[in-house]
Length: 424
Image 1 (cartoon, rainbow, N blue to C red):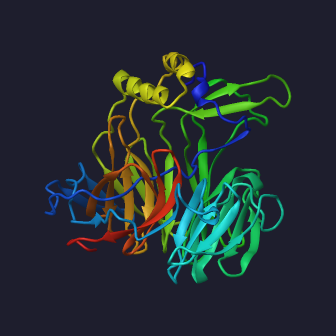
Image 2 (image 1 turned 90 degrees about the horizontal axis):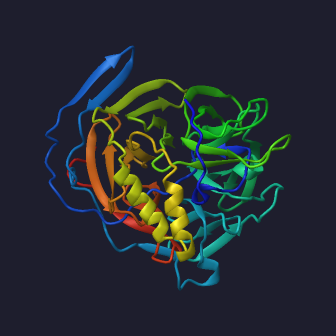
């Protein structure tokens, strides 16, 4: 079903024909709150359906379950307002800890892959802006495979590159190899790369203005881009579409709705996860693309109300220039939001194989809440954490991510993770 709607100026981005449905959006983290460490009081049920393990809970455990926490002071900080030039970071798109404790990050602001020592010293930088081998437009580190080789996606160059932290650029393959839009989403230890998550506007299909939600697809390839294994189609992002000019070569703008629902993914070790967040259902696949587990929370998602939309509009207006505030508030009156909030907003696989799921934060929330599930799909921890930190990677005893200060200045921080009494 489609409806026509004027697209608010605050939603309009760069005109494009291809839109990513699964951009690497920030995931937010910092010190954990304390709480009850007892077992969950709600039931968790398990059953088998045609060889697929189904695990269902009705409501999550209380915050503090498991006794896990994150120490508030970072072990390492790279960047920030007072950092030297070679330590300043901007538009960080992925960061991973290497086996020797060094930190590799994608600094999309300068189109570089940088490596810093465990003490935070810049060891080397690789790449520059461009379209040739070893050059990038908007590099994103999506994973680390055997030998510390980095998997780097670059949507604007339609490319996935392998980069070694010592040797630099190794080789690359085309992301879109059969006409379908695909993005690098993650990588398994054996070099398998999860691709997909794009939607396409234009071509032979007539584009209608208003609400749009196309299907998106996911598949697996090896580290050379070969051996495709299809994982099927899923709902893409909910968007507002506007045609900015008519006729051949029309420019099409697609902008996200407030509280828009989507399909989230995570990959790491020997497992990968795909979940459409209209409801709380996450599917786990193995490296051969076999569905082996479905994790569900049967709690209905929160309904979106007019009050939620008003609060969202108020925050948008507060961040705008004074002259634009009245227009922004007026624009929001034309928006028809989704009926319910997303059930979750991001997925991560930590280095021990646990799945981390971040609840969607409601407009008045000041904390981001994460649930952690072991390889059997059972809850082992639940943390409620501040919103100013974007999680890039979770290790055995650390969380690595991007901190933004009150001026939106970025720094990459390594935080100490203490796992509690219910260790899987």
